[in-house]
Length: 76
Image (cartoon, rainbow, N blue to C red):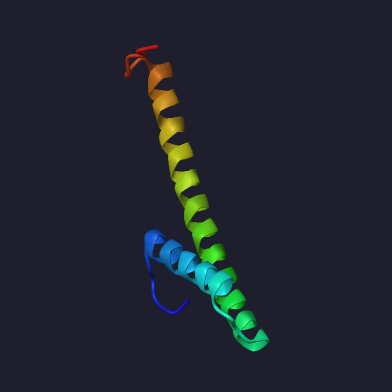
């Protein structure tokens, strides 16, 4: 992937490839090329999701730390 794209752009491209592979009568070579592109996009999306998961975990840890210190009201 040569340019930084958003998760949403990568997801849309992945969806388009899937539809193309399902609906078009592709040659074996074209199918393999599309599959390779899809794998790259999927890996990119998974990495983006994992990065977001890490950020969410960091935020949750900070919230828990603040709760322990008594700086955040617990509304439960």
